[in-house]
Amino acid sequence: MKNGIENGYYHEITPAGFGIAIKAGKVLFSEQSEFQKVEIFETESKLGRVLTLDDLMMTTEGDEFHYHEMIAHIPMMHHKCPKSVLVIGGGDGGTVREVLKHKTVEKVVLCEIDGMVIDACKKYLPTISCGLDDPRVEILVQDAIEYIKDKKNEFDIVLIDSTDPMGPGEGLFTEEFYTNVKNSLKEDGIVAAQSESPVVNKEEIRKMYNLLKKVFPICSTYTSNIPTYPGGYWAWAFCSENVEPLSYFAEDRYEDIVKSCKIYNKDYHNARFALSNYLKELL
Image (tube, rainbow, N blue to C red; front, side, top):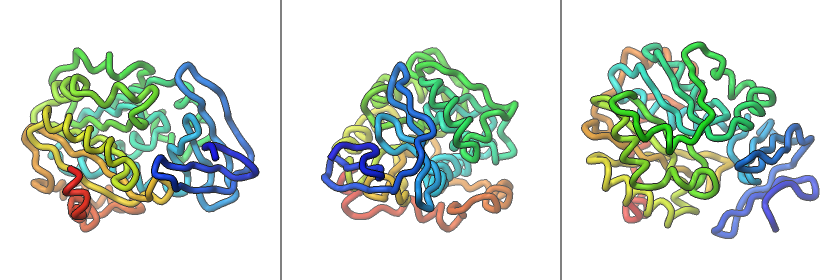
């Protein structure tokens, strides 16, 4: 069975041979961009609307907070005063929305290669994309690989909210790219990067962390559950030149952040860095 909508259901089967099915409703948007097929459709489920790229699940209205709160707040709360943030990918806007909850933030650059994703999400996923019109946000529709090459000492936080290591996202999983990202960081800067499913994408994770560890002196991982993602379990890389995981927590921002979150809190934050035995062996 191929991925996509068929016989009234959206199906996504992982390379591991299992997956999910969601009862699909009306297709709101479906076009082929220069890079990929972009589709947003209603569902007859508690998940609400769904964004897929090349028939792979990217986000749903019903569980997007599981991903966006984790990629944003874990690294942001480790930084004493994050003012400048770069989001690579993430054209749906969910990561930007969470970053903007931090009162220290003065500028967010969203670098997304596919403008169609941004436009479609602004129109059909307003609860996710609502931060993209904030005056602190600069939207660049361009290739992050090229954008980051000449950036030096510019960002406090870089969040790599990329697609999987295939298609337009493939070049974001290289040692050269990670080196350029490191060079773009200010002192005490932190990178967080989505790093696939520890259940489904074991080879991809091993390759990615081998590259990251060549570039960053500190390279750790944290995990959380995402109901609709492959395996229901996801990992993010936490990388820095000098900031260790759990070495600092921004108590001054905590109350403002936690009251607007559905999953994130301090206890949950601390527990994210506890890894299972098989994931420790994998890394």
